[in-house]
Every structure is written in C-alpha cells, then in structure tokens.
Length: 170
Image (cartoon, rainbow, N blue to C red; front, side, top):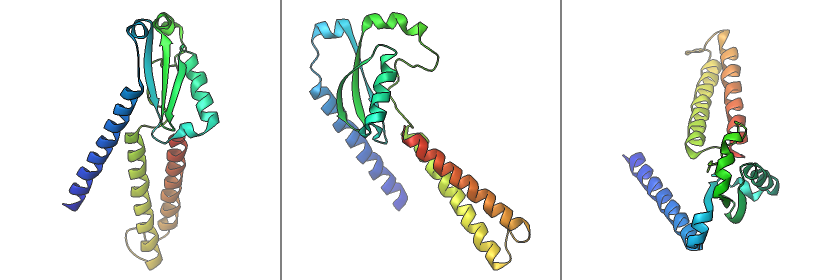
C-alpha cells in the first residue's frame, strides 16, 4: 500500500509542476488579437532538459525553421516557445516526411523513458539472479548455459541503458 501512496504523491507533484509551468507560460504570453490572426504559436518541450546545450538548442531551432517556425523565447532548459505565420501552413504538405510542423516534444517522452528504465531494472534483476545462481553452482541457470545467459542478459541490459541515455539526450 505504501507504493500506491508514493505513486499518488509523485503523480500529484508532477501535476502541480505541470500546472505551475502552464501558469508561467500563460503569464509570459501577451498576444494581441492581431498576433492571433497572423501567427500560430507552440512550445516544444524536452523532459531531459536538453536545451541547456547550445548545440542541441541550435539544432532544434534549425529543424523548426524548416517548417517556418522562429524561436520567440527560452523559458528554461526544458521549454522553448516558437511562432510562425499562419501562411506557412500552406507549405506543410511540401515538407520532408521526417518534419512534423506541430511537434511539441523533443527527445524521449516521459512514458518511453519510464518504460526503458523499467526494462533495464528488470534485466539487471535477471542478470544478478543468474550471476548469483551460477556462482552457487546450482539453481535455474546452472551448468554450461549459465555464463552465456549471464553475458547475454547483461549485454542486453547495457545496450538498453545506452539506448535510454542516447534517447533522453534528444
């Protein structure tokens, strides 16, 4: 039951943080009616704070410019506001397939990151179980197969960890 309570508390804290960020974004936004008729706006988010790196920020701005977006402001290392002329919508069909003019997420989403961490922890648990069962000379992974399984599962775990780190960096 403690896990359930901790999960609820973590979800409530995340929701509160999301609401604070949304309130900040609304407060910092002063659009006139003329702005709303001529421009469209979006915020691109990076859950890993990837925009703290100047090269990542420059890459994002360059990618968004392909669809006509220009950077307006950087809230923090996780949020960048863009705008583009409503006229630029007409060119969306001509964009390369890899360009999503309305993307709002850069890098991994929190759900993907959580799943990858879960898989890594599961593989680590299986690896440790196999390692200690092999060392005792018995158990599920006894015999000649044990070292192969330990190396295989450990290798998959390392690859999953590297993949998760690379994706989280945007």
